Length: 353
Image 1 (cartoon, rainbow, N blue to C red):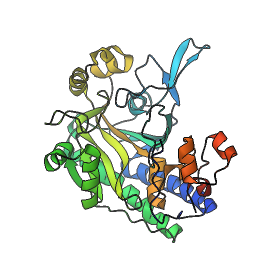
Image 2: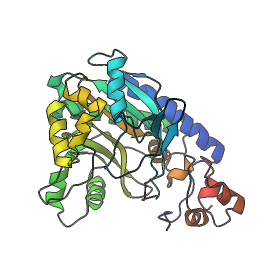
Image 3: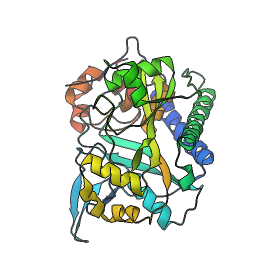
Image 4: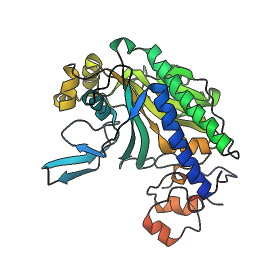
């Protein structure tokens, strides 16, 4: 069943060729702004990791990775969901020091993404970043300062985009409103977590929603988080109001990473203490890895928001169901559907004129 929503009166903000120029402008500008804001250096990243390393991101704990065998090395490998744990290990191996970090172009496949709608795709592209901090920096003040720096980099990029492409009209709010998941539940106990996010973003257009992963006083979680990368007390999502879709719009999931104590506690709470025997987890529990903060920032999400597109398929190439294809463009050809992709930027294939 298609979850496609096309806002009434929607018209693609840029013609196809100009759209490609705008996407390139955002990607080139933002990674420069981000690296300057957080003192990051670009590194190459893996598309897959060995299945027995424990390095892949388990996301909410239920998603299956794309797995395959490599006869030449005698191991199974799996396409990454994200690089949350790999980055921390890379910082150690590459000799980074406190106050310095890395970022990567991360590409992933999330085969079990069952909510394929305007903002979700099985193909994930994001800037994955990680930075070494001191133990003294493992606090809420440091987390908030980092969030403000990221939001500033986003807004600088958006403002420069609007100068380069004067027809674009999206304005983003630099002022960040900080709130916890428990505060949202206390205020709106009868709403779903997503409804709470929409409500708070409608009031405060740029929001950092903190403390995601653990159970709230109701006994329910706001959202799932794997227990072995973010510290659930020191993490969150950056949400921005999307004026085209008129809803909250997550651009980043991030946080201060687990130390020895918080990972042991969270593994127990999640009922997966057996992960403590994996190589990465052993290193962390033995104090062999640096303290870090990190996250992922969606590339297609950011392009979609800044340009003013209504569907992620306008700014990336992925696979969509036939119903979405036919609803997105009643005149879509059989050939387009059989190829099973929306070429990035082919708005006249994806969105009705």
